Image (cartoon, rainbow over all chains, first blue to last red; front, side, top):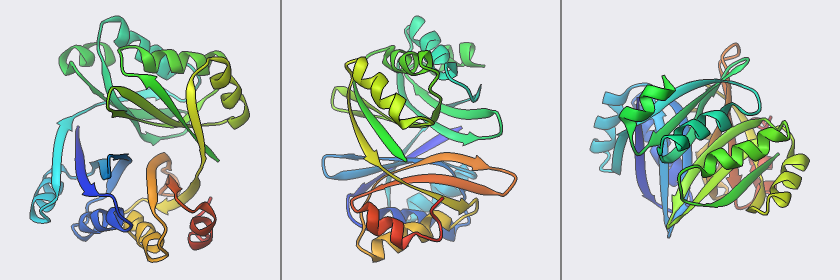
Length: 125
Length: 131
C-alpha cells in the first residue's frame, strides 16, 4: 500500500484544491492526515487507485512524494496499538508515522510507516 | 470532541509508551495520526474519554495541548471532502488539521475530524455535516 505526501502552500483553500483534483479523476481518499510545518502544509493520504493518483498529481504539477506503508488490522480495544508499537520498538524498528485507515465494528485498520519495512512486515503480518 | 496533541521525543518506543499509558487506564483511541517536526514527534489523537485522557496525560508529565474539533459525517465517495473544504475556504475558515475518525461501511459514511482556526464558524458552515 502506498501513501502519497503532497506539499502545499499553507493557505485557505489549499486542501480543497488538492481534494478537487482527486475527485475530478474519481479518486476516493481512503485515509488522510495533514500537518503544518514552517509555513507549508503537508497532506498525507491513501487513495483507492494509486496509478491514477500518481498521474493526476503529476499533471496538476503538485509537489509530492510517495512511500510504502504497512496496513495492520487491530481489535478496537485499549492496549492493541500499545502492544504492536511495543513489539516494533523491542526489535529496534522506528515508527515514522502512524494513522488510521478505517474502523469497522470491532476492528481498526492502521497504517504504519517504518524505517525497516522488511523486518516490520515479519512481525506485523 | 477534543483532539490531544502530545509532544514526544523522536525515539524508538515513544508511541508504545504513550499507548501503554492510555491503555492502562482503559482508554480506547478513536483516531490517531502522528508527525515529525524537527527532532520531536507529535502524536495527535482522539479518545473515547476526554476527561480521563487529560488526567492520564497530566499524571504522566507529558507535554500536550488540547483542541476542540469538528467531527463531520461524509458519504464515502470522491469529492465529499473537497466539498467540505471548499465550504470552509469560502467562509475564510482555515483548516489546520484533518484526520479520519472512522468509517461506517453499513451507511457508506466516513467520519472526519477537522481542526480549524474558527470552530464556531466551522460548526455553523458545516452544520448539515456535523455529527
